[in-house]
Image 1: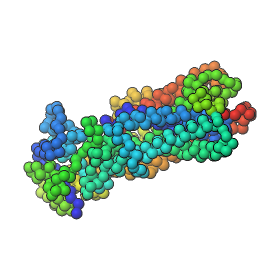
Image 2: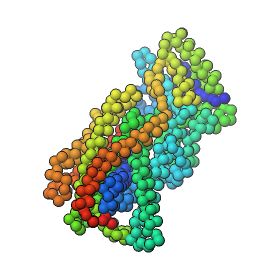
Image 3: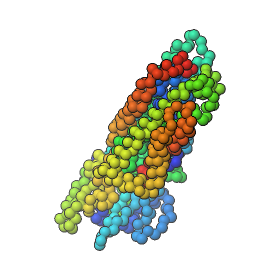
Image 4: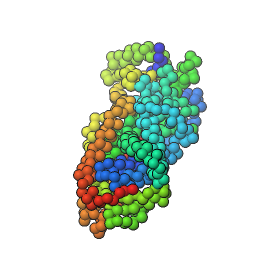
Length: 315
Length: 256
């Protein structure tokens, strides 16, 4: 098997990085500047899974010391070539934006306006790169001759939806667990990135976390619809190997991880938490537990999804 | 004029001399295998087995086909290679062993399951069409050694004529009504051609092989459209709709 654990973990991490930025940037754009802390958190936090993904990608190469050969070619027909450049640009911009946040802690009149302008431009560019990064993880597999991956055009949408739900899940989990659970006002969480960057304090409204969870449920439903579409497509596809691939996935050696890991963990259980939760306000008893349980299932389920698809395509 | 190799399955006796000659000329190591019930051996192409005779059994008949690189004109492996290590050298699809990073993308892209990743060299490897021999006026090792002349080498157009005549003979004289030439048009024209006694599927060949990147634009578009739908459905609807309420609740609380 040419592609194994390092590849599907890498796809999961890259999706997580791009998905969290995608979600946080849109929240800031649509809900207003009081959510700026969330997009900044996503920018800085995303660098770590992205770099971990790059590391996995390199060690999975047969000749890791030759990884720089990937940077000698820009080929729009090769998803791996495009993905290399997209990932590189995404990480570089995320690091640049993180440095800009840091410089805001030490403002000077001459630089502030320029810095803000650059920061806004980079933010939009990073959004475009995030969309391409999420899409690329699906296109990489879809442009192959493996029936499971290439029989339809639904693998990129599936991976995009899964990456966004994963991105939301990691953001929510980080804010609720890793960030200090000090509620500075009744309505805001304080995120301790401040200690790392020296920038001014970042606050994330509590209501945003509740709404992100709502958004996650909708994304999961979309993901489930695309998954059903993919399975149906494989079932009716006239292409050689498509039905065999579906049988292997649903009833063969991958049946347990598919039904338990992908269908239950990534879709049904998180949606059940959403339906059964006593509300969306974090102050209410049980909501916090429901959100964290749901997000944990989403994170694990997304890894199962990539593992099942990557392995299943090569059987 | 491009050169090609013609494999006539109706003449193949499965002696596997091609396998031995290939390993010998290219200095490829043997691998320990197990008896699988026939003389078919080893079980599949690998990074060190670049041609392999496949056995298929039907009532009163054995079907043999030498499986090796097709040296496609539109080669999927070449299209997806992210470093440019795979390129055409004349009709030969060649993997530059000094430049290949061993990413394995060509392994996933080939419709004939030909390239394999070598754990020792860390590179993808496959048939080179004996490029060192043919550029010096010789035949590939598998052709040179084939006792029944089931594998031929020459000008592609000449071999296509030979193949068509052989197919006519098989249909008219031997009753192989589904006999056909494989590789004339597939993937822009293959440089390993086949005379088959039955449909390609019977011999484990794809009826309509496609280049892996055929739908690359559509695949990108589908992902971007999905991202657009997600941006609108949950995010725009949930966060924009309540924007005003948000300002009321969090009056004056900046996120900085």
